[in-house]
Length: 270
Image 1: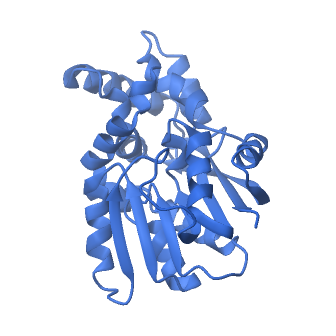
Image 2: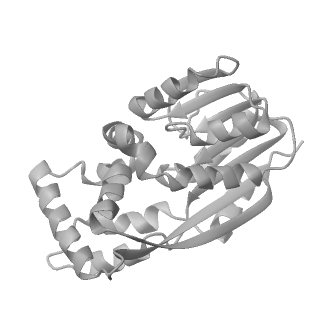
Image 3: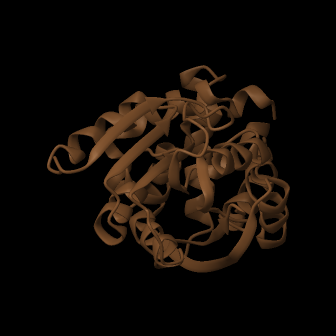
């Protein structure tokens, strides 16, 4: 797998294509964002940066439950942020400033916000250490960095199916699992490496079933960029074969898979 396949432009373009369907396809992310925000310590969170903000799940949780009144949203997908912007129009009391940018070089001033949050985007950041260092830079001393990401073990059943396929699926489809996921120990180390004080790092594993069509639709929504270097007809053919393999591995309730959510809350010393 190449770094370019997970570069900012490729990921952003992939989510541009799925912006219209993202809200419904990943409704579980709203619940995860709520649990992340609930896990943050009591404090003043009037100003935040939402890194990989997408359609604004984390920001809206902060606005409704933590009194946030100024949001800087940074994302690589302008189309996703258009969905965010439209939803924020009903909240004139909140300043929402959306910026196209890279998590490893945030277009945000030093120590200018009370918290940096990121929900279900961190796994796509090519340089995770740099992204956390940038989040730490943006928060004031004593400010909080909170991250929700996909953890190791997510969709492991999918990986098993793909590894058994002959002919094989594109290498990017299987190689991505090692590249993007982290576990609690690795996340703790990343926080420390960014100069942050970990407050809590935990994971939750959910066992789910879904009809193959719905499962494939979710994959298309969140990971279409993994096929960006393939001719469309070739990507479609691989997708059809994968759908057939998942159907063969399914039970009466659909395809069963695990999803690991990794949560991390840390403080900038000071």
